[in-house]
Image (cartoon, rainbow, N blue to C red; front, side, top):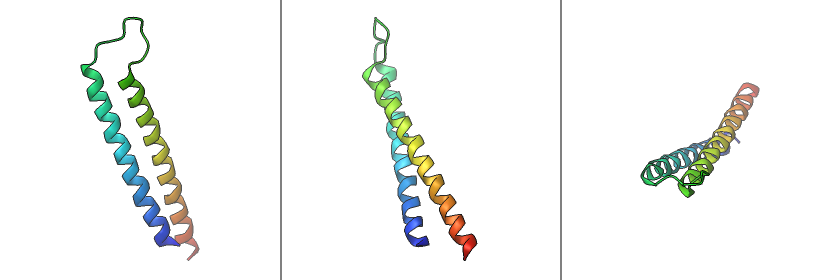
Length: 76
C-alpha cells in the first residue's frame, strides 16, 4: 500500500511542477500583451489563474498523500 501511495505522491508532485511551469509561462506571455481597454482579464491572465488553481489543488492532494503515508507508517 505504501508503494502505491509513494507513486501517487510522485505523480501529484510532477503535476504540481507542470502546473507551476505552465502558470509561469502564461504569466510571461501575459507581460507581452497589451491591456484590455475596458478592463477585465486577458486570455493569458485567465490561463495563469487556472494553472495556479490547479497547482494548489495538486499540492493539497500531495499533502493528503503524505498524511496517509505517515499514518500507515505509524501503524506499522
